[in-house]
Structures are given as C-alpha cells and as structure tokens.
Length: 65
Length: 245
Image (tube, rainbow over the protein chains, first blue to last red):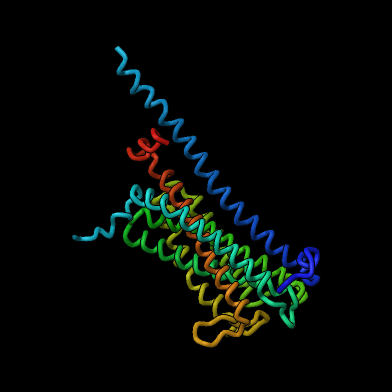
C-alpha cells in the first residue's frame, strides 16, 4: 500500500478525521496511563522518604558521643 | 530439589521480579506496536468497500479483546485473593482495573468513530455496544468500590465480589452478535473457521493484539509494584529500600 503523498496519507481516503481521531485518542490514553503510573510511584517514593529520612537521622544521632 | 512455587507470591520477592520483567514487556510492546502499525498502514491494501476507514480495526479489535480478556484476568486474581486470602493476588486485580477500563473506553471510542462513517451514527443501543458499555461501568464500579473502603483487605474482598458477579457479562458481550444479531457484525476472527480477512490485515490486527497485551502486562506490573509499596510501607524491606532508593 504505497501512499501517493503524505497529504494523501493523512487524508486517509477522506476518513482521516475518524481514523486519526481513533489513533490519537488511543495514543494519548496509553501515554497518559503510563505517565499516571510513573507519577503515582514517584509521589509515593517521595512520601516514603519523608517518613524514613527522619528515622535514619535519629539513628545516626545516637552514635555521636 | 523441590521448586518453591510460592516464592513469588510474597510481595517482597514479586516486587523485584516485576521490576526485572517490566522493561522486557515494555520493549516488546513498543516493537510490536511499531510493526503492527507499519503493516496496518503501509502494507495492508485498501478495502474495496470501506476504502481506508477500515484501518481503525487495528486498534478497535485489539482494544475490545483486551477489555474482555483483562476483565477475566482481573476476576480470576480477585477470586484467588478471596479464596486463599493472598493479598498479592488482590493487589494484582486492583492493578488491572484501570488498564481494563481504558481499553473498554478505547473500544467504545474507536467503535463510535468507525460507526459514524460506516453506520451513519456514533452510537446505537445495539447488543454488543450496550454490553461493552456495561463492562465499562463494571470496571468503574470495581475501582470506585475499592476506593470507597479504607481498609485494603476489606476493599479487596468487596472488589472480588463485584468482579466475580460481572464475569457473566463477558460471554454476553462475546456472543451478543450471534444471539441478538443486531447491528454489530459477527466475529471476523475465529479459531475454528478459515480467516475471512486478507492475510496482511489479519497479521497486523494480531500483532496489534499482542502489542496491547504486552503493553497491559508492563503497565499492570508497574502499577502492582506501586501498590505493593503503598500497602507494605510499614515493613522493614520497604524502609531498607527507602534507604537505598
């Protein structure tokens, strides 16, 4: 299937709106989901470090005479 | 040498295993997406009847497959978690729901955008479309129910019940086109009959199906690891992990 030109490819036989409407939304849904998953983990790790860092500081202080 | 089958059912060991597997699945998914889309748009010929609009099939059908497949997987993990009280199984079920809901939405969205030029309407109360919409509400209901309950273990049990009740909807979706014979066409791909599609079109659709599957595994594994950290934050291994992370 060789497309005559890029504009022909994007026209998609006159159905460009529907075809690219489907693929763009699909791409953004998947990319969005990945971004959300990464974001969820990053915020959690930040919260956990807020909890665990003070504890480690306390442990270090105990060793100083 | 007795194989310890349950080694990876402990959240801690599954956490590291999933960490190693996630990149593997995401790279495979990316490669399959590139191959599937290339064949779909640059190799598969124009359809005699629908000209180019049919190319939506390469994302519509895989999304629909995944919406049903992921629901069954989610319900099975939820059932295992309910029966054996294994919290990791319930975590995996909780991790699958958002991806399943996304694919259900995509199946409905791409279907509507395909229906408009071909059927002349975005939506019709057709047996398959309606049962797929119910599937979307089931996914949202599962996530909402689990979010509404504070104690994770009780949320898992409640989620398992709604997931198992919803399983009856999956065969309804699959056979709706045969039983009610409404607007949506019958199964194009079946394991028994010879393919009714041109070879390149079929190949592209199958590759895209595999790509969506690999994608789902990668995202679900990533989300499961986050849920494990959320629920095991009080444990020693998470605080040690924190020390290094």
